[in-house]
Length: 546
Image 1 (cartoon, one colour):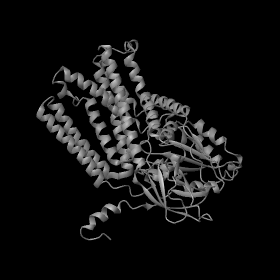
Image 2 (image 1 turned 60 degrees about the horizontal axis):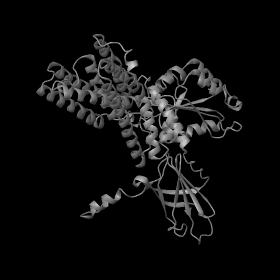
Image 3 (image 1 turned 180 degrees about the vertical axis):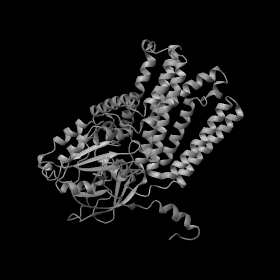
Image 4 (image 1 turned 30 degrees about the vertical axis):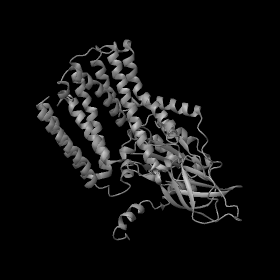
């Protein structure tokens, strides 16, 4: 109970610094060594800093340094024992302080301490960077990114008559927008992880406020592409110098937009590269994500640096205006998809709020189109846009409650196939102990790659027949909203986002072990069927089970 009087504020400030109970799903074990103990803490993601404060006296040599060795899902701490201790304790109880001021009360029990992660070699980092670059290039072909790249391609056609150095400038500024955006995202992700959050790639799409703001931004962009108004017309009317400045600014923010819409997609090679990157030091992480950013920017950048290629582009003309308006169609389709994702987790109230935001943005667009390049109408439109942003943030935070059932995403995602069950580690262990292999689909409603894979591979009749023949238990881990257990499971698999597809053999299979089979991020029916055909024969013995 808080203390009265002047001590109340001190009590309130210090209360937040008390250690918390051990997080759900985290494990703490220890084993004896010649010099003392090895304490392993597995919290779901890599840790690089720790200090253990024992609750029992005369067990550890407190002045001795404590060496931290990171693992994929936590750390191993080398502790020196007190010279007077005769027997190992039944538990190691105390407070474990981690980076970012996190502190947990733990009671480690005797067990097998995992081997520390081997040090990353330059060859490992170079390989991951190469995979990231390839993944970034392929990302340009994904449905979430292609409309933005298409818009940038139209601008390249529009500026094909400009001097070469100006075209190169647009390419470099566009690349800078992509690189800076990746750095901001990765910095935020690493910072939140250091503070104790179990987040992964695409974490921002787990926020309903981000989904609403993103949908509003794309809706407003779609209105401009469709011809309701011209973005930046007021600025460009101020003079030629401002027009040039606005052009480079547009190139930069087109790069930003490309990154924002790219995060729900995971291209081939990206999953392994991103998972590896987020388990390394900050320097290696930023280097790998820079390679990913350069891969995403490479096609447009190469076009601006190759005059011979740009001459092959069609000449500017009236057809460009028609094509620009047609580009609004996939932008509006993306808006519909974002609204659907928001409805999955926040229900009809969120959709009503989002439609109200769209109405305000349409009014702002009408003002800009009705009175173009006018100061007072532009200010009025700006106020309406601010009102839409405030209404979106406040409405989704206060009035849009989470879906009534926690498994709404699982139910929706598995509609039409009742054999899929919600994922939990307990369910994986239960089926494997019963002698059945397990297939886990790590997915999310906002992940376009996941939705495509489900429709072209996982829900096909031939794959369903192969699942039944192999007696596979099907589990769906829905990551549409934040779920620490799923985040920890992905980290343990060397992944940091969705999609991820995992096939476990049954525990009864000879030599099956605990090592799962990870399938590629882009699936085909043949890939899944081939993986099922390699299951040990013992797992298919009772294939007649439902």
